[in-house]
Length: 430
Ligand code: AMP
Ligand code: MG
Image (cartoon, rainbow, N blue to C red; front, side, top):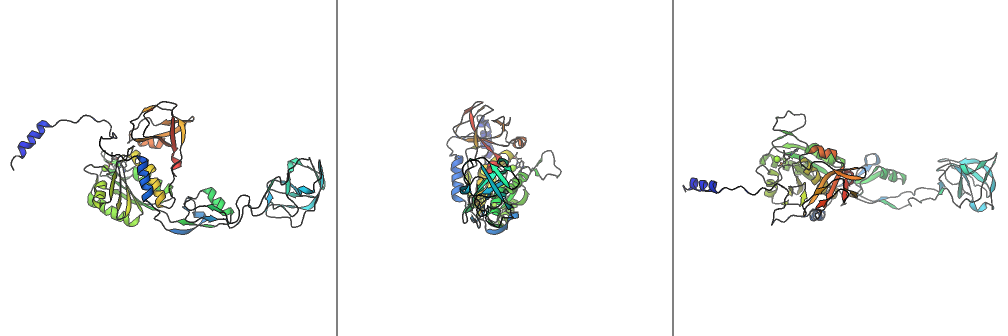
C-alpha cells in the first residue's frame, strides 16, 4: 500500500542479533523433545515384518532371517559314540582293582562300526566318533592303557560311561534348535547340517532404497569443484545395508529439487520396502526431504533428544517407511545404527533386539548437557573406552577410527577418567 519501504527501514533499524547459542544441539525451552527410548518404543510398536518367505539352500543361508523354526530331523549325535581314541568295554563286567583284559579282534572307527557284540570282560579298540558297539558303554583313554599283544592293562578307578557321548545328548529328535527371526550365523549352519537340514525357510531380503540429497554432492570418481563434496553417506549406508543381509537399491544422488526428489521417492517406494535418505532433513530452505514428507501428510518430524542426530525425519511415502537421515556422515551413521538398524530388523522379520554393550572405565573426561542422550565415537584401548578427539559431526575420519560407540545416558553430566561408561561395539548392532 506504498508503506513498504518505510516499514522495511523501520525494521532494519530495530534489527538486533539474537544471543549467541553456540550449541546446535541445545534443547530449546518449550519444545517437546522425544527421548531416544520413547522413539525406539514407537518404532517397535509400529513396524512389522513386510517381507515374504522362500526356501534357501544351505550354501546361501548365511545372514538370512529364519521364517520358520528349524526342527531336528535327527538327534545329535545320532548314536552313542566314543569321545576319545581308546578302548571300550562294559563297565559292569570289570572286576575290582587294576585291570588286565583281553582284546577282541577288530575295531570300531568313525563311520566304520564294529558289527558284532563285545563279550563281557573283553575290550575293543575304538576311535573318536566311532559308534559304541553292542556290549560297550565305557571307554578308557589310550594314554591310560598299557597295550600287550592281545590284552590291555589299566589302573582301577575309571567311571562308568567315561569318555562316551549319549545319543541325542546335544540335540534330541524333534527339538526346535532355532526359532523364527534368527539371523543365521556360520555356527547355525553347522547345527542345521548336523541335525539333517539342507535348506531353510527364510525371509526374502528386505529391499532398502538409498539416496543422497544435496546439490553439492558428487559421486566418488567424478570431477569435483572445491565447493563440491563427495558423497560419503551412500557408500557407507549401502555397505551397512548389505552387511545386515538386506538388498540395497541404489537411487543415486538427488539434487535439492522438489520435483526430482518426488520422482525419486516414487521410484523408491515402487522398488523397495524402506527408503533411507540422507541430507535435506531439517527445516532449511533446501531441506526438501522433510518438506516432501510433510506434504505427503504422513510425516512425523521427530525431535529426538540425541547427539549427534538432529534432524531425523521419519515418514511414509506411498506407505513405504522413509528414514530421512541427517546429512552429516557421523550423524547419519549414528542414526542408522540407533534407529535404522532396529527398524530394518523389524521389517525384515528378525524382530527387535537391544544391541548389547558393556561397561568399561572411561579413558576420557567430558562435560555433557543433561536431558539428551549422546553417542561418542569410541574404541577400546587397554581395557578402557577411549573416544575420538573431536566430536565434530563432519569428522568422517573419527567414524573410521572408531570401533563402537560410547552411550552417555540422558542424566549423565560430568564424566571423569575411570568412570564407568556404556560401550557398544559396532558388531553388536548386527
Ligand atoms: P544437510 O542435512 O543436507 O543440511 O547436510 C548437512 C551436512 O552434511 C552438509 O555439510 C552436507 O554437505 C553434508 N552432507 C550431506 N549429505 C552428504 C553425503 N551424502 N556425504 C557427505 N556429506 C554430506
Ligand atoms: Mg543438504
